[in-house]
Length: 117
Image 1 (spheres, rainbow, N blue to C red):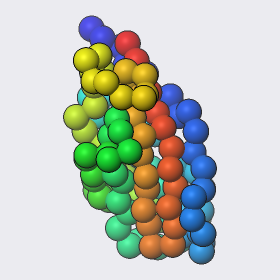
Image 2 (cartoon, rainbow, N blue to C red; image 1 turned 120 degrees about the vertical axis):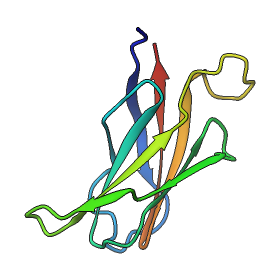
Image 3 (cartoon, one colour; image 1 turned 30 degrees about the horizontal axis):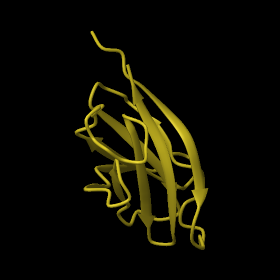
């Protein structure tokens, strides 16, 4: 059985955030080819994640579900699928490294994560 580990390498703010995303996004529920990105926001408006192995991304996903814990903020769950290590792909990134951009009503965050064996 392959062991897949997702590592958040870097997340940084690119645009102005007007209270929409209230904490750094985090990864959860890892499987061999998918992961959930959790984003905490001030709004229940859908969040979109574009992701891929190049800056063209190639894949996208939107809020699958939301919950509102006692904090009064909305936690969005966005499932990223189709993840794997492509050794034959010629990019400027190491094999299995994905880049993403998270778009919400009030801002944009970019980051990277790795899929390793």
